[in-house]
Image 1 (spheres, rainbow, N blue to C red):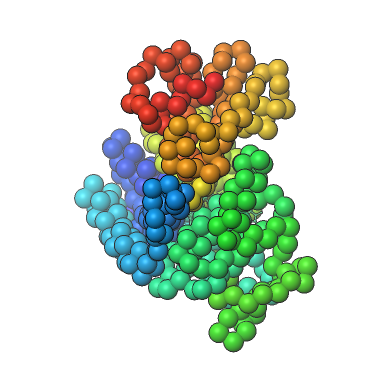
Image 2 (cartoon, rainbow, N blue to C red):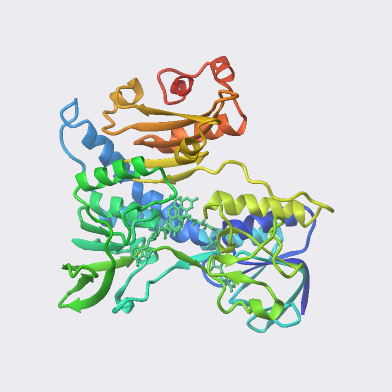
Length: 444
Ligand SMILES: Cc1cc2nc3c(=O)[nH]c(=O)nc-3n(C[C@H](O)[C@H](O)[C@H](O)COP(=O)(O)OP(=O)(O)OC[C@H]3O[C@@H](n4cnc5c(N)ncnc54)[C@H](O)[C@@H]3O)c2cc1C
Ligand SMILES: NC(=O)c1ccc[n+]([C@@H]2O[C@H](COP(=O)([O-])OP(=O)(O)OC[C@H]3O[C@@H](n4cnc5c(N)ncnc54)[C@H](O)[C@@H]3O)[C@@H](O)[C@H]2O)c1
């Protein structure tokens, strides 16, 4: 039996933020990881995805300028791109582990679960702690359809040796839309199938419609309002059948229909930690139904989006909460979400839909940006922003953006909203011109 102040289950971005934070506060900390040190984001999520996305973005910019001073399209070399991705990801687990060891944080590799006395079991090791933090994340959800055993996941996609000529993606959420962008740009025929008529439900409906039109223009076969009911082998390929009776053959089918919290086999019931199908139940101090067990990151059932910076923020919060008497409840700043691709979709703060529902408090500036200098310069075909303004203060409190530059614009607006900067404040700053930042003055 080894004794710690805090034992953390899961060595992803959330668990690691808490581990380093609590260690810096003088706690004796242990982290348990059953698979790849570093977790989803740097091994099978954000980072490898965005490495694959780099040439996609460049190709998109090149396509937009064809006939406007640029001739010749760019071709993606999948093998070379995958080699670049692997050169990055292969160093992550060892690098993460050495960082923890160098800091003096205890590490255990293996599947952790609770014993009935509240201790944590990792193979033959029994770890005892004042508090335990569950940071076990989410895993791809594989829908239960006929032939589900043939379905691949984003983990497989992000490590494909060769990109098949024809792929099908089941679900047009964050993962489905981003993988569709990558595969299409790299030369695959892509079928993107979504069960409802309204994918990316958290985002502004008009901008999602614009984005889907862009994907269709890129040659992606977008099929809405239809369910894949069966996948079966057909020679070297798979035959896909939908509820409408449509059928086609494809080389690989990927389940991109969401992710499920990793709670099975943790023995949560042994220590009376409650969970729903959306994750572990916590109060406003990230404390579970067991006062000595806390949870953070993707595994938590909460309304905030399941993103790396949110997991990291919660790790920092628990650093304070577990080392300060009477710590305040967690309070989240505005959280930006971005769907990456040739055209990026981003959102932050009060949504245009919320603003329209409360016209006494808010107004919405719906701006076609295609004629603004920043977007004309790069020939962005569909640049658009909806800016939500609080009527009483004149401050920007939310935004939804669709453009090749959305990831940058949304982060500038994050500062503007978080600091509650008025247009007078913004005008006091001299920004380099002409840049995306110098556009900020014109949004409200
Ligand atoms: C394809 C893809 C792309 C993404 N892109 C982005 C993006 O661009 N931006 C963004 O912000 N977010 C993105 N995300 C989401 C992001 O990866 C997660 O929000 C983030 O990794 C959550 O961190 P976490 O620490 O909560 O969980 P994880 O990173 O999932 O880490 C949990 C760890 O716990 C381990 N574990 C599980 N059970 C046990 C156990 N019993 N014992 C020991 N260890 C265990 C797991 O092996 C894992 O390593 C993406 C996700 C995917 C899948
Ligand atoms: N750029 C980013 O920040 C980024 C990228 C990828 C993932 N993520 C994070 O990971 C989470 C998971 O992403 P995701 O795309 O796996 O999930 P998601 O919840 O964003 O999208 C999955 C979609 O599939 C649909 N669906 C469910 N069952 C289906 C079925 N049988 N057939 C067809 N469609 C079906 C769902 O309605 C949903 O719209 C995201 O919510 C996000 O928090 C973030």
